[in-house]
Length: 360
Image 1 (cartoon, rainbow, N blue to C red):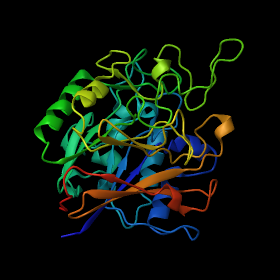
Image 2 (image 1 turned 30 degrees about the horizontal axis):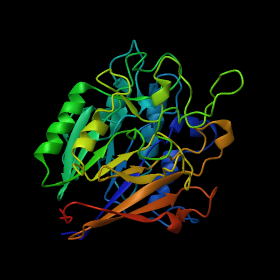
Image 3 (image 1 turned 30 degrees about the vertical axis):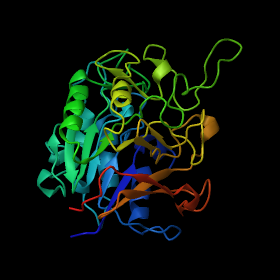
């Protein structure tokens, strides 16, 4: 039995955007993790949780970018595609007239229904997926992962338009009800929830209007972290804003406020903040309602407002040790923009589990 479990939490690779600038964002990170970058240390990981936004397209993603996603995953030599667990981000969403989330179902494919396209063989999963592309769970020892994809599809105001990422996050009412059922039925386990977006006012720039700079003298907002989409809930561009089509629903937030400590950890991305950036007192890692919240964005260097390029690409490595209630979180720099490549020692943190970790 292994004594440790290493979870690589990463996302927001925006593959198409970085590729246009000569960088293979996901492939570079994979190669670094497996020790093939002479300027950066490698690291062990058992699974990767990719928190979405594989696509960098400002229009609904297409098969060409999907093929590049698969080509970059194919860089793995000591790991397998089935060790990567995906969820959909807002940029991965299909357009209003397209089949529901066809691109993510084909290339993210968490339930392994499209192996021909995704390379995901469900029989090869180290930990079995139960559910669908929209919401699923899997268990690692006594860690229960509840993974929810963003439903930013189907057209404004909840879904994306013809152009633009339409950043405000969304889940269906069915997904929210499923999450409550799973949380309440599994209090004997350590519960890790994952969605592309963070919850409101939990981590860096996850509050109302925090995706943008202040209004200028003409009353216009400029992009700071997200693009301004007037018909897509811009107030909530930085967090999970829509639940069952209701704006600024705060459904998860109200549940956790009434049931503090109901889960252990929420992992997301979406808002690409610099390594040590703090907005309104909130950093990448915070605790609220007895829950730890971790923003692990972003692998992309170029998918940002111009004043934030180049971005110091980063991800997180979480280590769980058998018998321990304390888990380790390390920040890995994939570029040397804000310091040398590799682990940023000043960003290392720990967080508490409700139950001692039991390794699988």
